[in-house]
Amino acid sequence: MHTVGTLRRAAAVLWSLVLTWAIAALVAASLAPRARRLLSARLARSTTDALGLRMRVTGAVPTGDDRPRLYVANHVSWLDIYALGAWWPARFVAKMETASWPLAGTIARRFDALFIVRGSFRDAARVKARVAAALAAGDSVVVFPEATTTDGTRLERFHPALFEAAIEAGAVVQPVALRYRKPDGSPCPAAAFVGDDTFAASLCRVLREPAIQVDVHVGPALSPAGWTRRELAARSQTAVAAALGLHPAVVKPPYPLRPRRIAPAA
Image 1: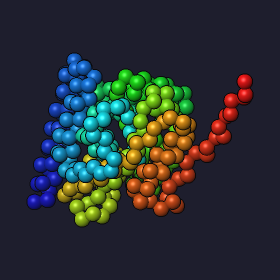
Image 2: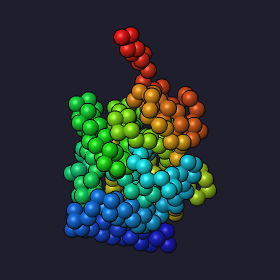
Image 3: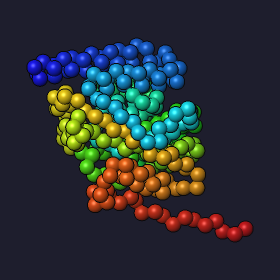
Image 4: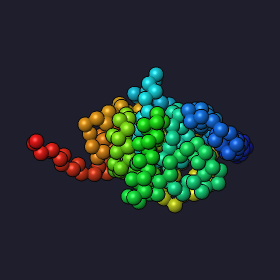
């Protein structure tokens, strides 16, 4: 019976992905940006339903506030994109390899993902400029500043480069903490997508779970005014670590803050 249920969910997920791919390939480009964001969110909700994800969003959820935001979240899995995309019409910063993935690559490209070469300072500067332009144009953008995934029991330091985009655009920074649980409330390791894991193996693990609870906790919005990018990164990392209830020993210290330059007197 469990196998039958898994196969049904697998079929539902495959149908959702193929439908999303078809709509992305045939329809998305003809829509205005705002309509494209709303369509992307609607399709993400369909996929989370097919995957059996049960969403719970808490904290300082922005309601009735259409200001563009830089959402910064810890990164556990490819599921993160669907979990966040189902709630907020936004563009995502994704690793460059995603652009060439079957199905997912087309979906990401047609829904205006911003691709970055991980580990390249030069490319980080290019993407920072594009994120700043997107925020200035009224789009919200989701980034995963750890630049890698973890199993959710620890937190890597937040890289500060893309926080500069919020400073340049004057956009709000919104820390977000993601946690995956089993129906009984215990951690769900099946959701993690780390190391040399493959998408197929990860998807099979997810489908074998009866259900997965996704806790999305939204931290207080941070104004970029008067802060450096390293300070914003450190404050966001601290907010996410606190929301996850992580012990300081499993949270990598943020980048050291640089002394502020004091302008010489006239």
